[in-house]
Image (cartoon, rainbow, N blue to C red; front, side):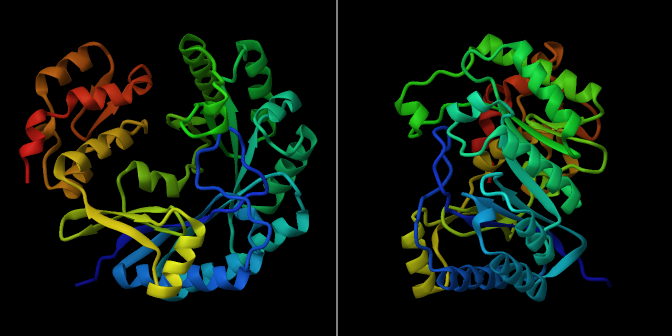
Length: 389
């Protein structure tokens, strides 16, 4: 009998940036001197540690996130990719993404990353308006962004562009002009995020207010309509792709798949004996580094998710994507039929109110429903779920 291998996504976190954006709540730090060899050894140690936990898996995607991974030496990226390929079985269509900023853009550096194995670039453009870029604390200019986009499309098989909208006082007309331009020069994938003010960020401490809820909804609908009209599939709340160019790595998250998180602050989800284990790496880069050197891993904790917690997580993730929550996959992941964990009365109300759509294979949120996923999840997951073992 042919042996089956579970799919696995690998996330590598590089926590360093040249500056911290005022809206950013990621695990990002400014460090003038980085011991690259020491970091390489630590990252490769964690790769080895998680391989021992997932030997029977096939790696389908690798994602270098941050921070600013484009600040990593290309040889370090190359060595991590090589280590992963030597240890695990890997997909013939292995997707390897690296996040990059236009700041300090260098065509030869992009070519080095391609040579290291990167085949998908994720460019953090955020805006094509110089005033908006200054407000967002970005160090690059509109000109930098345009040069980087043009080079990214030429050098990499796939080039995704990140943009932020719903800024304070942003109008439908000004965003439409910017959106039309980015679509006209983009590659095959767009990540279009609304500005959110997260606790602990500079914007939060400065009491910056994003666009009003009414304006944000208008801009979301305008974004969706414009992108779809231009040939993009709206496959997740903030993600748009031309046919065949969805982010395989991010789909692993949204579909509730298994993934490992390597590096400070990274998270993971692994299935052990039908129980989902949530892993959390030590947040502080220095403390993580010391822990890896001492123990071989910078793991802060690994805990089993309770049935209700895991089910709610799968709803929050699955309702974000237009394909919805697949019934067969849900049962495989939780051991429970989808209908068993849902409050049927509330489900019918949500269907009648056109927040949800249901068929034999899935439950999915409508366009209207994707605006209130948290509220839907909180109401639809049966309170009896807490009693399920």
